[in-house]
Amino acid sequence: MKFDTVVDRFQAVATGIQSNRVIKSITNGFMSTLPVLMVGALCALAVGFPVPGWSEWIRATPVGAALQAGSDASINLLALYVVVGIAYHLGREYKQDPLATIVTALLGFVLVLPFHTTYTPEDGDPVSVAGAIPTQWLGPQGVFTAIIVALVSTFVYTFVVNRGWKIRMPASVPPAVSRPFEAIIPAAIVGILFLIVRGVFEATSFGHMSNFIFTTIGAPLATLGNSLAAWLFIVFLSQLCWWFGIHNLAVWGVVFPIFLAPAFANQAAGTAGDPLPYVITLTFVFAVTQWVGGPGNLIGLATTMLIFAKSKRYKTLGRLAFPPSIFNIIEPLMFGFPIVLNPIMFIPFLFVPLISVTVGYVLMTTGIIGIPYVALPFSVFTMPFIPGGFILGAGIGFGIFLIGVYLFSVLAYYPFFRMQDRREYKLELEVEAAEAAELEAAGRVPAVASTDAEPAPLVEPPAKGATA
Image (tube, rainbow, N blue to C red):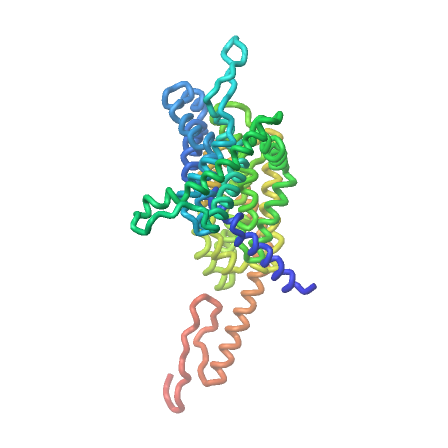
């Protein structure tokens, strides 16, 4: 099979994933929650600021209680924000009223939640409390239920509306009045559907839909998300997409919803001062593969060009690409170097982040560095690794580790860059020699042979009989 055929097929698959309405809506729905996640991450950062004794002190003050509430309002209600985001974007994809799809999806989500919880007082027996929705199922553990309900409710809403099953008001009625009436029948059908779902699960040992989904889907995936092998495979696919010139959202759009829950479980535990339940999470992987010069840790290549380039092309590109790479913007290198479909850069681009993630995992499991839990990396994509690595709740050691990742990327890219730079430098010398030969043949010669960035001035030969 020809290489071009492989590229075309790979691009077709990735493009199909990116353009799928469901995948786009889920991805965009989660991206819509970033402002909320940012608030929660900043509250967690304020509580877990890496200063000795700070966390213990602030947790004992009213400020600490307020910050804990800020974290709870974002992380512990994450499923609600996910329902809103996905229903909004999928409603727009199907050209429905987004507000109506949001309200309908929220109705469906609330209908499958438990309306009771269990409270255990000190030195007492557990007490069942009615009329209370446990926040446990509104947070990360309820995310999968939120995704399913948002998708199903919007599909049903679209199906009903497209068949004209709605209350039609006269044309003279303002849209603000007619639209809610048009949504009554679709919302009622969605409500009946999820009331039936609620009744079915109440008749089982699971008790409700969220418990069933988390037990059968969420918990196994969370275990998978704590696997180094799984994360290495995901990072490899992400890098491979970029090397083919495809944005890695084709991979992360699928992975993001699945592995958010363990990251936020770590953040909730870290903010509360409890032991972290997971070692490797989306927080760690994003910090290593995104904050250190973006995918491929390309700040290492930019640094190498800036310091060691001999060719005029890469000297210029190094000066242009280094500042954006500090903030993890890699497009100048991906398409200007280029990295895309470049066989020389294939090995470092794919394997530098894989090695960095592996080393980081070993250091965390052995206790040499702390485990980051503040979920900032996927809220602030452009954060540089300094100061980023020092503010994730993992202590100074993790910040030093990210500096080490940066230095490793510089060393790893150097030999591969030198191969390309030598070839480019040789080509530039050949072009200059050819141009000089053409000028000499035309009766004009360079005054001084030069291989610097500035071309040599040209001098006309003196006429016959003239003095120099």
